[in-house]
Image 1 (cartoon, one colour):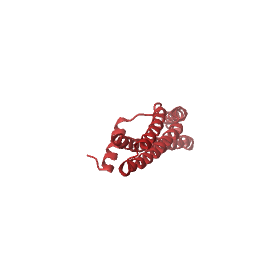
Image 2: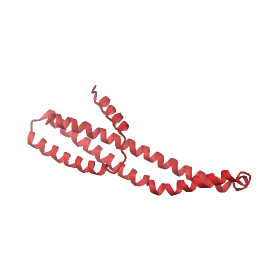
Image 3: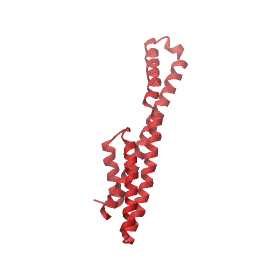
Image 4: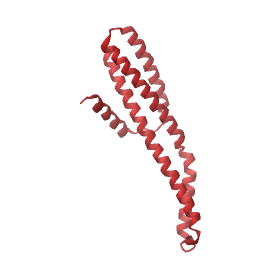
Length: 156
């Protein structure tokens, strides 16, 4: 039981970090695309006099602006960001619960209460993993987060 709680605590810590990193990544992408769209749209309109001399550039910039505007709702970063932020928070809460449980493992020998709590937390994990299936998956980032957890916890 002791080892299972320890591993679950590390897993929850890793997942909280992973989803937080993905939230930051996708929020940054969303912000950059929106700024790009605003600059392109306003630049296209503001430079009409200049664009008469270079019509192909105006047409290209207008096309890029239109394609970006069309792609934003399809990419729907906001919805993904909300889901990932929720997952990050839930995994963070679960990490805290496992840490509290880990302290009980060290201090007491109440195995039945530990088992009940552990099963409860595992059920929560299962629900979170189900929500993760339709979200982006980045193996390199996951490994980086795992290495951060190991370093933070003093594990080689």
